[in-house]
Length: 353
Ligand code: NAD
Ligand code: DAU
Image 1 (cartoon, rainbow, N blue to C red):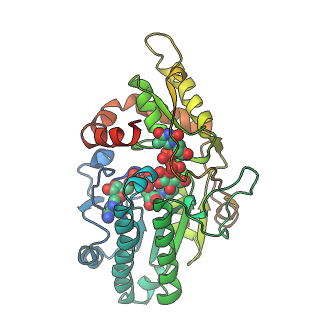
Image 2: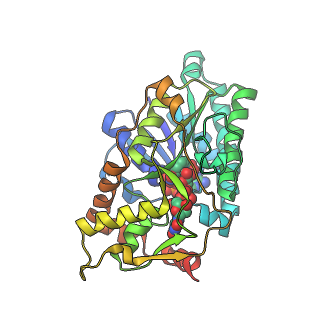
């Protein structure tokens, strides 16, 4: 038995593979194109481990995916591969259309052909799990109920629109071709190996480097935070027991305004790694121009996955965020490597006044 996991050199995918192989000996084929967000250093602890087979390539390469499927005969495909950063999608949507929409389409085509020729038992047991986001549902007002699986799709950024399109393709391949699909829509993740272009790792990195902590707009936008290992356990659970064709919202009931998150990070850093001058890190907070079309609030109602599949997160925000800050303090070499080179160009483009 084998699983094919795409995008597993990225933040969530690499955590998923590390957790998977910590709990089972079932090998993982990791197909990742190693964009700026893909980093094999995340998986360095698996060097020499025959259960992890890395293949560099795109989910949009039909021939390559078909070859991998034929060669390894996986019992499941878990699709994490995507362009994932909203701000980058605003600067340049093309890559998001190519990977998230066209790439997912080509991946589905290759999987459909593979699935079609499987013998009966393997065909029945096969799964295609598509990892998506809560952003496809759009933005909530302050007192709106949290997103359920039946909310309308109202994506607002090129990123979320491209993810929404991929979700629709996955759904269509189930209804039209009978492909055994599952979709998860998760809230904001945080934890180890999170690339420091996203709020939490960016703030930790900038704080320690004595740089401004940029808050978009008034900082009162709300996100619903989930520790990455809890997202990984949810994906494993859905793969194991999810109903075919169903979608599952994944979240930890942890809504926080951005400014509160940044204050929490500053307080933890004050305790674990105080500034040399003894001043609080919150003095580095700086208000910057808001993100165009910035969604005001996301919140996930995770009742369905809790009720039907018995999944629950293991971490609270308080335990997860402390672990995360400690991980960054303990892994400054990883941070130094990923923030050299092209990262500097991105920071210059995004945060220049
Ligand atoms: P990431 O940007 O850290 O990693 C994406 C990975 O995909 C990288 O390793 C990259 O090299 C790879 N990739 C990009 N284009 C590819 C292609 N064409 N073919 C193969 N590999 C390619 O992203 P992440 O934060 O780990 O997110 C993973 C998935 O989870 C995405 O689908 C994202 O939409 C979804 N998601 C993320 C969050 C979050 O908070 N980060 C929340 C919910 C859902
Ligand atoms: O909700 C799930 C989504 O969460 C995933 O689908 C995306 O892949 C993931 O990137 C994340 O999207 P967000 O846009 O919510 O995450 P980001 O970390 O970029 O921003 C979190 C919030 O913080 C958002 O309201 C914007 C704000 N922000 C972000 C940055 C980078 C700032 O105020 N300042 C910043 O410098």
